[in-house]
Length: 270
Length: 52
Image (cartoon, rainbow over all chains, first blue to last red; front, side):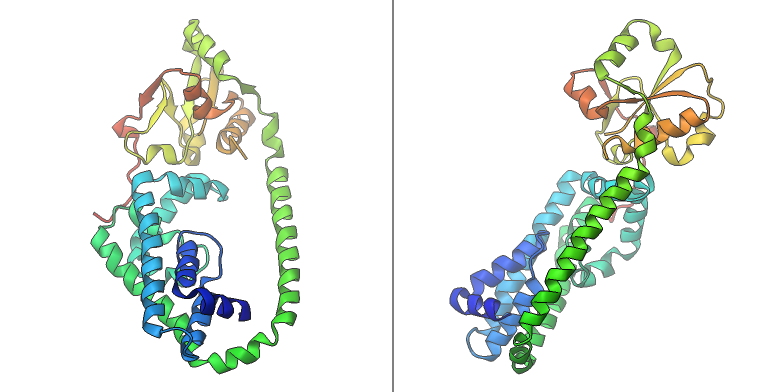
């Protein structure tokens, strides 16, 4: 905290704007802490509170607008990418889209207080074709909530914060342990994914050259090429392997129950 | 994990007696190899909700 206050005192509003902007575009930097420090610096007359608010709000709206445009341009690819780590990627996109559609407007007001959601809400709004005017209005209100909450806290409790910084050494030790636990958790998660997918590694693979050769050599009669992608079917203009069919993984066994067992089925995703 | 969905579906199909394979590299490898593609038919498209 003391470092951030010193940094803000020396470099002022540009540093605050940079930190807030970076967090808005998804970089894990402590913007809330910077806002609290800026609020405390304002109370100590090192910064002007109105300029703190203007620089923070401008940076936040700029970052959010960039992600909104990215979501609009990339369609569902961004959500598809994020859903790749979900337990059920096939239904993740649909569930996420429907959930945001129901609560999207409210979500935009409070998303900034929720780590992980804060950077996801603007691109989702873009993907779902929310009007730019409506997005900016809702995002501005949400940004005001966030900025006033943290900067206001710093402004009102600047005296208490000075006392808190004396405990920073002890907190730093706890943070180190937290990082170690987080790293172990990440390694364990990767190990779990490796274990969960071990049985799938024995499924035989075919190279694209070999498949193309088989398809063009007249063997295609006993072959089915099936597309099991999750997000490829949400974007207008999406393409697939010529002659392939859609095979919905969530409805798999019902779909194939009448298929002959003597054919070869070639499956692909992204 | 790459090919997670296709490998999982192929595994299930093989458990049910089908002769299923995974296309190594998926659509990306197919496209990179310059093999033929086609637009996804409109009947197959899944419509997600939008705000407009």
